Image (tube, rainbow, N blue to C red; front, side, top):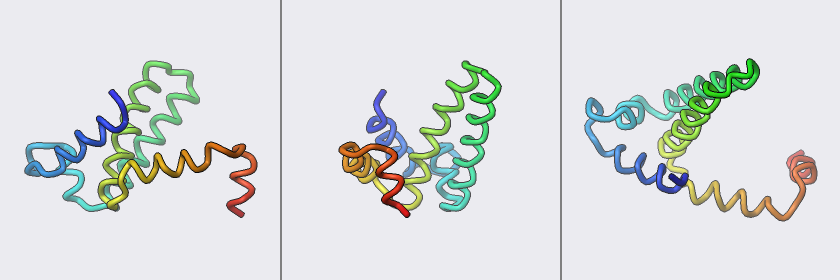
Length: 102
């Protein structure tokens, strides 16, 4: 599955009744709750990585990607915008990109 396919699933499930879809339920709670849930999943991924829990990290990374897409949807940011930003950054080193943000 690609991120684009997962984003399409998030978009499709967003229009379901909130009791029928976790995605719709989370979105109905607003962008702040979506961001909070993304943060929770990110912390769980960090803990799994720090403790060397490979299987846990795999599952938590999947949760992070899913909840990132839900959070983006909640704020009206299409995945294509994120991918365009990554493409823009591809031509420079990470160190140069980070220095340019200051």
